[in-house]
Image (tube, rainbow, N blue to C red; front, side):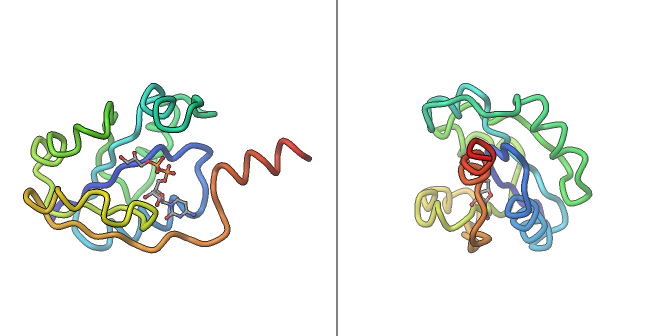
Length: 129
Ligand code: C2G
């Protein structure tokens, strides 16, 4: 059972590792699509703190991650799911319902986010320290 998930995973934190470990536990392999620097700029209006190469490097080093690739566009999800023959798409529930069209290609599940931690909050805390 191959699980796939997507995200930026910038300034890697415990909320990220929690969702990756939970996603991995739902199958036998975990593939992670890492949003490109350009996609992040398009989504959030700023470039990530860490480059896409460094974010991929961190994710690849985790025991719960089997394979990483760059996600170039949100619209390419169907293509990636089919290319990598994923059986299950897992996303955090901030994306609840957003990827339901993928149910024609694989199972789709949304997991609850870890409360009280986000990259945006970390950036704010560091900025004001
Ligand atoms: N996450 C979480 N708990 C947190 C913070 C993040 O469970 N406290 C999860 C998010 O729900 C997401 C994953 O960690 O599933 C990665 O989060 P982001 O890096 O913020 O991902 P995002 O920029 O939303 O990119 O194609 C979809 C996008 O690439 C997702």
